[in-house]
Structure formats: structure tokens, C-alpha cells
Length: 302
Figure (tube, rainbow, N blue to C red):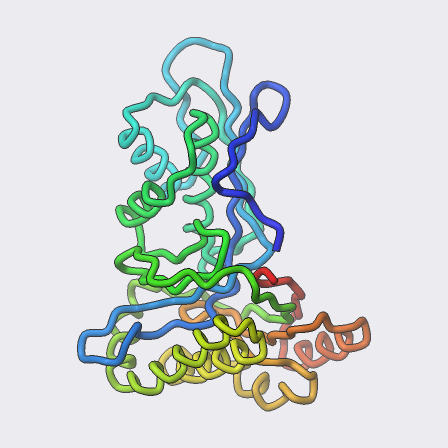
């Protein structure tokens, strides 16, 4: 999946010295569950990067005086303040502009991507090397988050903001998915999730083991099977209305697996190979019969 090269700094992006920061979003997760079975579980995720992005631009101004109020969301503005405090810097006068392809509240990591894009922009404004530890520290002060600040898959503790294991860039999928109505408040459902993880810890442990084996062997079909298991376990606590139909018709469409945004509103198919035009037409008709518009997107890397 094409994306920003986090550790590489370049010159101003355009006339007037405009600089930008970009961050991809996610299509939920290939796994969300406990890191290990036990009575005190932590939420671990393997986020599913998608070729959809958040952009943040800063254009330094030419007039003297204090910086103008940033045209950023509340969390991104907080991230900018924390960044400036960390490096003991002052933002020059200028204008912020933002754009995003990531809907809010459906499980595409929109707010985290906005924050990371803001920080990436600031690293470039001040010609500083990109530091993932600084990014994780800022995120930890703002919200539970995932690993979109990395340009690879990772097993990540979302509450502790800790990378448990990097999983590389060998795996990629083509997807067909839908966005179901509504939004999910992740903080509000966290106690429900933790109770569920205590009850089903052994099943989650087997699922995670299978997923990591799939990554280790570079086997997208194995990863897709484990993602389907994780999605099925999630149905017991945060069900998706379309999941049962998707799972029942998976073989009909030749999909390798089913994925969901575990604390969001997305559900869809994983394909190791790109579906042809005829398959896309059939998938679109199928999703339409379920009352949803189908979207196609490339996820992961590979």
C-alpha cells in the first residue's frame, strides 16, 4: 500500500513553503482481543491499514504577530500543543488546512490518523526527524489508539501504546466492505470487551497464535482465516448485522476471509487476489441486497 515514508524528511511541498503530513487509516482490525488469556486482559490489536488517508497542511505566514488559531480538530490541536511543549518550540504564524477520507466513528482510526498527520506535518515544519516514541507519547496523553503511526503491521497494546511485535509489510488484501449505520464509542464498550475476553481467553489465544503464524510464514490465507475467527468472536459482544450473511456466502465469492471493525461499523471480505470486474458486480449486487453500498479498497501492504 502506498503511504508516507515516516522517517524521510523532504523540502517544502509547494509554493509558499507549504508542508504536509499524511497518515493512512484502517479498515478496523485483523485481530482485536486479549494479548494472552488471563483474569486481567489488555486489549491488543492488529490494525488493518487501508489506502485511505488523512492530510494536514501548514503554510507559514508572512505577517508578524502571534500564531493564528489552528483550524484543527480538538484532538489534533492538543497534539500540536503537546508536540511544541515537548520540543520547546513556538509555531510560526501560518495557516492550517485539513482533509480526510476517513469517516468518523466507524472504525477507520480517523482521529488517530488526524493526530499522526498533524505530528508528521510538525516534524516537517521544524525539519526534525520523525520519532515514533514522541508520537506514541502524544497519543498516550490523548486517547487509546492503534499503530497507524507505523508503516507496517504490528501487534499493539492500544491502552498502553506499546508495540508488542512488528509484523512487517508482506501481507496485503483486496477488500469489499460495507459501513453499517451508527457509531461506536470505544471507551464506553471497553468494560464489555474485557469481560468477554476473560470468558473466551483461550479461543482468542488460539486465534492470535494462528494469526501470527500466518504473518511469520507470509500466508495471507492463514491470516484471513484467523481474522474471520476474531470477527466471529467479536460478534458475541459487538455484533455486526451483516456478518452472518457475509460468512455464509464467503465461499460463493471466493473470499479468503471476513474482517470487521471490532469496535466500529465495518464488515467485509478479504481477497488475497484482486476480484475481477464480474466478481465486483456480483459482490455489489449481494451487498445491495443486504441494504448497503459496497466499497472496494486495498488493505495492508504486500
